[in-house]
Image (cartoon, rainbow over all chains, first blue to last red; front, side, top):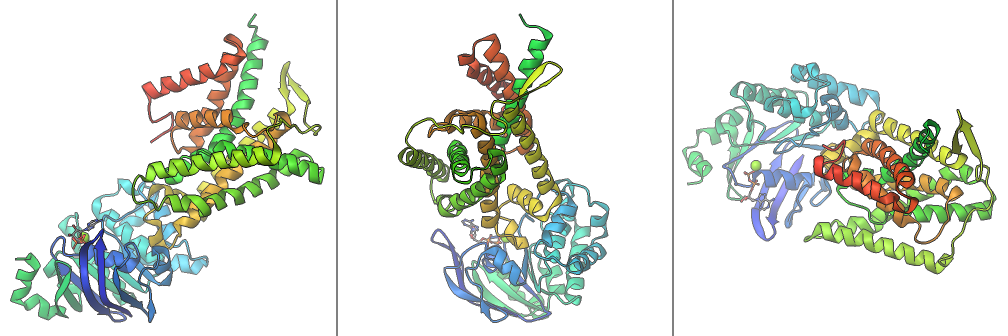
Length: 234
Length: 292
Ligand SMILES: Nc1ncnc2c1ncn2[C@@H]1O[C@H](COP(=O)(O)OP(=O)(O)O)[C@@H](O)[C@H]1O
Ligand SMILES: [Mg+2]
């Protein structure tokens, strides 16, 4: 479904990710793990069109989307739950969700994902009229995931959904990722939390200072002693 | 000398002119709120709309009132084109983005003025006869010039329509979202450049509507936009930068303060009252009356 080939992205000449290749098959949960600064966010932002790649190809369902603007990437079926959530803080929860279905004119295309979001995160349904900025960190993360789901993506990318969230909610959110996949959406998740993430993922890539240093089935990665070192960046 | 009737008359004149000022400022505020760009060519948009009205009156022999929606539509295209043709490029600047934007719109203002002087000469023109020109209505002894009254009503209608657009439509929601975080709207499939272009179009259409009605009772010349733009900048600052409905209240305040200063001081000094109020707000509440 997604095929990243030799992707390199730099910030004003400083290379953040270098020669990264990875693939995500339909209905998989693929994890990219790595320490802070390894380049996980840069990878997702480049795929989503928020950063321009210096070189490489990003094939989504056969089409090269490298360098396409974010809204176009989203239209093609990729949704990103970004670092820092990027909600519209002064808009109500309801409006944040509605914005997710901006491109969908048919009522059924708006109602079906909304029902799914409410099933995943019932507390959002109770807070529809609240401004997004008044939600707790965990609830904001749920809303950001919800907003992404409202765009009806075929590939959902999550950038450290556990960041800044109470442990109890982390499980709830990671559980929701499983449910999302069961409903037919492919998932590419980026995390610092190794154990919990590898538990829900099918395959994983380990990123260290902008390069893939290891990849394989999530179980193997979880059991590999070298990973801890790579992961800690020693 | 100041009778109750006198005072009502001053307040009424101020209110009517104030609503027109609000309509002029609305577009400026909308664009600023949307993308933090001050359009220094706003007064020239007003001037363009006045000449457009004048030209259409001559060519089509229709009344400015009938032509006002057409002028607004023309200005929508002008505004959107300015964004797509100029502003979008200025925003791509890597350094001194703010200054590049200022000079881009300031330069645009000078160019539009120059073109107007070249095409229409600096002569003052006016629309010789129209339905409303020279007409006056009176309500409980308070006189209301018909063109100003039409302008005030058009302003209220425009603000009402703007409110409906912003609160009740998907596009309005996209506009609000872009104001909040333009870098994030792409994540839900919204093309922010389209929203920005629409914002410029709407902003120019609003000032275009004001220009069409002003042309009924104001002389049209290449520099006509300047003083109005100045008032619009004060109105936007007073209402709170980027608060479109703050501009409505601020416009009315500016209009009334102007009318009072023109009477209490003298007409040539009316700007002083406006700036006094503005400075007061700057000292006491720098973000403006309704700013965040
Ligand atoms: N906007 C930016 N400008 C310059 N450098 C950046 C920017 N964002 C990230 N970087 C750098 O790129 C590298 C990778 O960052 P990032 O992708 O955020 O890593 P991670 O998400 O794994 O923590 C880091 O060295 C970081 O300092
Ligand atoms: Mg990150």
